[in-house]
Length: 127
Image (tube, rainbow, N blue to C red; front, side, top):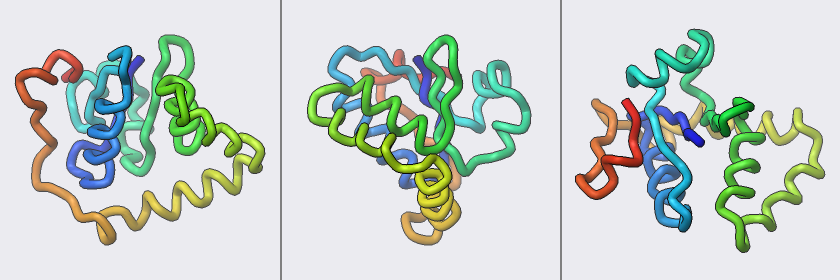
């Protein structure tokens, strides 16, 4: 299972840190949308669109709010409470997601280069 994220986005980097902390079974791998692994695996239109977190679970590529909700399933525990989000129409969930995504650099900032994982986390990152 791979989480694709915008490697220079501060919000995205914090999200990855959160997932690393709560992925107790260590089943998630991570790849920046700017990296070689993403270019190898994803269709070009997905790489151009840096406004979506993508989650690939070996058979399905989830985008936007679906990716977030599927990740809540993977994390389990109290994160499953967020699955009530599936009760909202997808266009509403994704509209909110897109609003935050379009403003994330302004609100949270961004880096000049992709985050570099620490030695102990290196095996969880693909590039």
